[in-house]
Image (cartoon, rainbow, N blue to C red; front, top):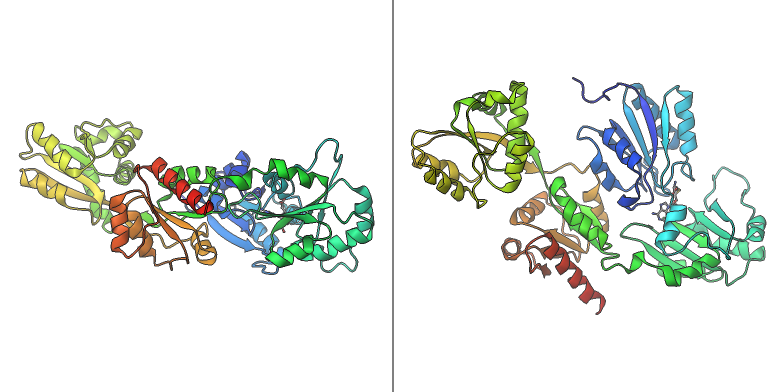
Length: 513
Ligand code: SAH
């Protein structure tokens, strides 16, 4: 089966709004489209974290478009979408905010229509409204304005004359929201004043709105441009002109959360990372999820297949990790189409997550030692009447500790080790996390076990300047220190909640001087 194509084979392009940046501001429909896509073409302003929802085999293409740094030109993007769709693929074109608000979405849709290809539009939450909202500025407020205008500060450079009628804009009043104009704020504010706008009209600029890097600058028409230069305020930003800006004084909320403005690295495999990431994000941190390891098939796959084929001939099958369970059953169901082929073999699982994974396959767990270590399983077997001549298969990772097989054979069992998978350093960078860490640095990195320390260091990423270490407990801290790292924060309670609490206190101290 060619899994690179959609099930239906129906070529289609989805123009999807990725929202303004906050992962929570993506529509359910957008998430669904990303999960199903064969090809994803994404923009500079689409939060790359959402690419982790994509299928493993999805082709992910960065189309760029940072001001002045276009990776692909617009007609190249249009052509790319058409070519990929013609290959019978489901193509998602991910665009920041809403695809039809200053996003050139209509041009792309036009090219797709011209090529006779089916398409859908998935509107997104636009930065024109969400940006101000996250700065505590409502774009409308009864009694203050009854209309809102969106305009662009960056027009098509090939146009001879500006089509923005500043006289009309100024006369219209209300709230004016401008995109793509941070660099031109001086001339725009000047033209508004020339047309008679009040010099003290409140103006706000919100950059990287709804992300962990959000910053807001508030001023007046007269002084905003100077402030932008003085503090080096840079794009991308949304500008709001109007009385509503003054409401921020009361309504500013997002920038006041305990971890606002902090960039924190979470290093774990994707599935496990989300709990820690979500808790940190909820407190306002910008989380960079950095996958450090990847699960790969074992070096000797054929050998493993033969052991799995004979699974029914064992008295016991022992699983030591959820990954081992997955690799085993994936192979098992390639060889057999009926779970009863496992015969009378009994199943032992070390740790609750491993046992749960076995149960997910609707297979009974016969033995689950109370403690989550290999030694405990040996004790259980002895309790159950010894191991003399029992045939045992252990499905495990390559290069795992060999205490378990040694002890079991020492007690008279006939043990086969099935190398089900291996862990390798993650070298791909699908979400661009590594690139962002290199370019933008981070305030803190979290380590939740010794292996997260080792796996991170094995990546060989240069240590970002000033990045502190938060450790879940003394064992992890010791590993980190052994590798020459300094511990900035150590959790008192050694779980995710404890770690988050410690990080929160750490930055609170920071904030209060
Ligand atoms: N379709 C997008 C706008 C694309 S034009 C939308 O609906 O939001 C690109 C401009 O959008 C940027 O130059 C900036 O002005 C604005 N923008 C997009 N995301 C932003 C964000 N998170 N913070 C501030 N401005 C943003």
